[in-house]
Length: 282
Length: 346
Image 1 (cartoon, rainbow over the protein chains, first blue to last red):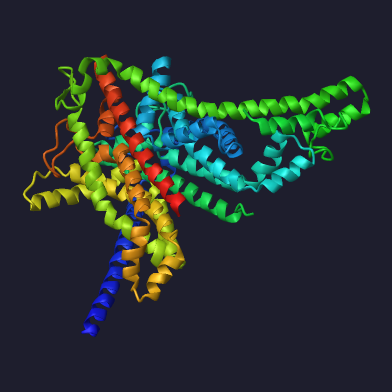
Image 2: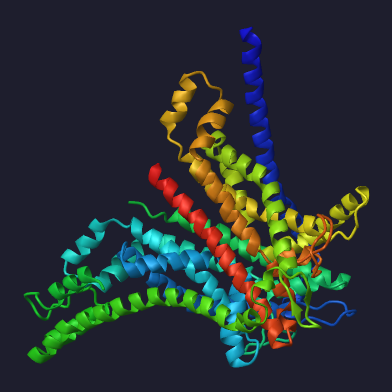
């Protein structure tokens, strides 16, 4: 009587392990599929011309994504310039004031902002910047991306700085260093790897964002370095060309996908390396 | 606002025995700004200048405090402004339709009739189906990574892969879905004698499911690995198999955390735009089944926002954005609340 029950339990145990392992492995497969497919389709589209040429009309062979590449880099750069200083300082504030009214409210806002759908942030940027300036612009795209970066930078800064032991701060203060200097010369440098990691993840995340750019940066088929005019960018090129019925454009979209995925995943991996290399340890 | 630091700065700035001392760590370093100021000051021995030097860091300190506080306020302001702008610009549509906006099923920009029901249904349908598909997978990953392969190298590899999956831009998912998944869904629809558009609610749900697995998996994994070892050991000592430990100890212990993870990934699914827009078919009618086309709240904004010519059309789209914002806010807040409550009890 006892034997078959134990046998059943063992069987159930082994079945469960098999199912769990299989499902876990299956859910990692999409990453392999996507990367493999993007690589396969993208490699054939990429050559030197692809990086330096402007897009060509349908029917003409060739054409590249130079304008979109430059646009993406500019938009993300301006977004970082807007988001990082504010994010860093707000993170310092939250780390230094664990529990007062303003810091609790700010913390709540950071969480809300982090969960806000990117399309809503795009609508917000449209209402604030595009409507008041009267035209689509790369700058409004940067603004939208900056709003999306802000919560990530604030949170990682706060979390990293909280790990810095008080004794370190107290040692610096007891030597007579003013408070702001303690923050800049002791606290931030000790947590630098965590902060850099957070900033890189934030940049990686917004580089691939498409929805907030749809009606802010809008896209532009010509080279444009003026941040206050509509600007081409990689995600929008992929979206527009992928939705078109033309094979040539699909090819360019695959090439652009490869470049974008490469950029984003590289930044992800690099940030992992940064955190491993210079771990904040106390 | 910040009594602690105020006190420190006063004691350093004005009560220091040597008024020339600016409290700098960098006194000996010639590179530091304060160090330079000091050396110039020392050579010119004027008491009035010295006094100025002493108040200098106090000023900087105040400036620093003000800037840091202002930054925190900026974050607060951004979210308030966002909410305010959405409300202001959806006023025309709120006035024109009121509550009937969310129960009316006709969305026709040409006749200026705007009812958002088709998009509400589309959003809920895609998100729920996606959730339904993703739950077994995310649960399996979190049990696998949180319990079975906690310290193994393969577990580490799998964890990194899942995390990278969260980093792939959504437009890439959309493009991949458009090229790979749509033909498969079309074949499936043909085999089942359903309308073979390919672009459909089902395709959108499948893509969404792939996209949200990493979110719920990362939270559930963390919660599962937090289950105290002595509880598990007690169960093992009673002769439980590993399956029984998972089933009767780990899952009940971490249930609320797992639930919160599912809730948060649901919030993600609701707001996801690009991948859905590319595979859902974009028709403004209530979907009749898994294989019919449709539109979600996010995808209708993405499609029509730049084309909205009338004020009422734009305002209706902004109101959909406002709805989306409020719904995701509530769901996210509920998820965070559950996590917080849970983490206190552990």
